Length: 277
Length: 273
Image (cartoon, rainbow over all chains, first blue to last red; front, top):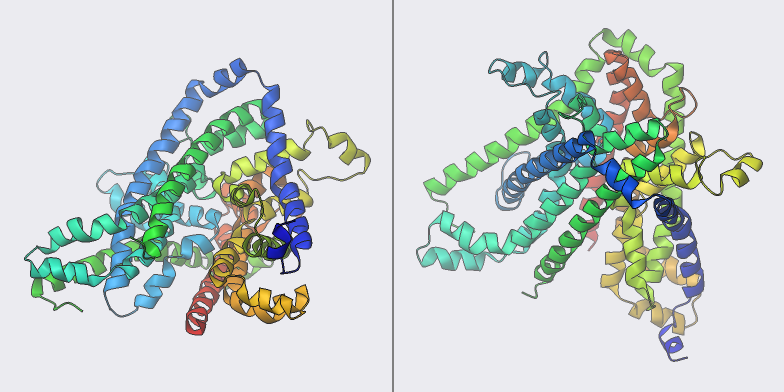
């Protein structure tokens, strides 16, 4: 064998064996059972399930709120990353550490905390109620929860790219007389765009499937504030596995599409990070 | 650095202001809310909610699931990272994609997948039943779901570090006759120490807080298959707000501890390299 010369390092057999067995038990067999179960469903059945009015409405709610939340996250994420990389100010390290909170705080806890803040009796909800804006139990509430969940994704993808950016280009543009806004849009933004899109994609993918933080704040009104993961959950509670799987398939395809596109963009972003522009 | 003009100074403080406002409103306020609501009716109510029999059982189950997830994913992460970065083989891309699948699917779908695998309509259900093994709506299901949702957390941290390090040192050691374990302990592990700890912390954080997937597989039997986040849900839905927030405060404290450990690890790791 030609390959053996490359494998002077021991442990190929053991490490592959352990890796493949665990992957099979944890990921492969469960995924296969999903495929097997799906194959038993008729195509007509699947289409009928996913085109029910209530399901279609939930796709709309999930997609729209995730999209708006991810756009907000993209904008806020760039601002936060910029502030954390470019400026010095007191308590900056604390601010930087706080960004990670949505990864560390259980979603259910975030959900009930945001709900109690944004109901009419809550601190934030009470303020907006004066202007007739309701947050909890509306789509705005869902969006708020998703902004919470998604923000670290954008900040943490944009931050390293901004750190790598050579200020020489900006200085050159400045010397040549470009205004600050022009420098940002013409010099800086093109460099961080792939990272912003990657962060947007990661946040969007996460938001579409999010359940824990949303169920409490959403109010779960059919057609109004019922998200797709919740519909799957209720089908499961009624032991209607066929419907649950059919709806889950749509979400899986959407999630893989988002992941695929994000990976394409990320590959380009990784090139920049390695310095090979 | 640039010369700061008055204009750029104003922009700077406006942007810092926006950032601070966002973090305070979106991230800090929810944390404070949990603590404030938990202590609203005084210490005694707080203590009795936290020391409640079902809360203690939920804590124990959460710890059990978290420990299992960290252990399995550690074993997996180390072996997988070793296999992926030290050797060339066909299908590497397929393997790394499979490892990443769990974090890309919705937690609810993760739960659904395990219900389909081990539930009543599954082909292996009769076998499990004859062996008297319960997975769905039982503790093993919760543990499996927790392992699934945190699956790539440790390998994902290790692989890039090992990739950047290359294989030269290990090859040299192997040629000089060192065994696999010695190579790992003496050469590889010092390189991945901080990345490994970082992965463990992320894994533990996600494992203790997992809600959706565990919720599908739990069946919500109080005292039996209730983890802390599920216990919070039940209390909140029963309008027992103070106990719900009291139980949440345990998770908030754990989250804050995790954040602190995380920044220490990141700081030490940067210093080392």
